[in-house]
Length: 386
Image (tube, rainbow, N blue to C red):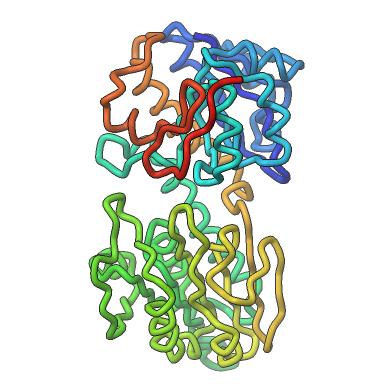
């Protein structure tokens, strides 16, 4: 099979879907790899590194995408809604597409489906043990959590660790992480390693042990969390009334922090607002809030995606596509996730036939095929192939 990797066109996207070190694994199994010129350069992977691993380098984008049997992408479909539309004409019914596709973007999902391509969305990989090696969301979330702490440390006019100096003792920074998923736990661990006093909250009380395992204190509020976790391990959307009660309970904790990092997101929905302007106003002057849910609207009412906001003496960062700020290692991780999914779908020995459609990973990740959006979580099917 011919595997195609095109250069990413999403603004400021520096990752690449396949790194040179992964090419031999595919070639040894009878596959051919074709790379668009410069696809890996921004991540630190020059064309020469791909050539050394027996990949073919092609200048023409259409010759990479349209000729491939399987296309690996970082961002396609709804994950690249403006510039990605130009690639739709290169896709065809006989192809398979694997990448971040923003499947809950109904219009762009339908447009992708109408090409007839069989598309597997990395966002839909089921959270089961067999699929851990394919879990790209977790891979990227861990990088986002790490980078968020570095951004906060850079913006905070204080040191993170406690230090004893000739001028006296300097107290450690206080860091509060909202949401103890993969990103939140990585943020806790990173802030702890930098010497901060770290605490964390999650609507799922079952994560207390995980929070404490990375050296943070779990903050519990007197709230009826009920069935707070879905079958995929994500926090459920709890409704406006619950979030208002949560805000009131959280306000006193937030007011004592030097840094707040928010990570709460619900798949396919606008992020819940957990931090109000009044809560920001009560934070210490010079404190920092990093909103990792900025791409989904933000957990703070003052967040502006992609911007830094100064409000009431607090710096509010709304980073977007944060894993792309660490493109070298992000690409390594993403390449392993995509390759693992590809080998699972098509067999480890170079097969061309996709595995049984009843396979849990196949069904869980399949977004569209034969001209229609087919995943049960998605809102509506697309029309037939034109």
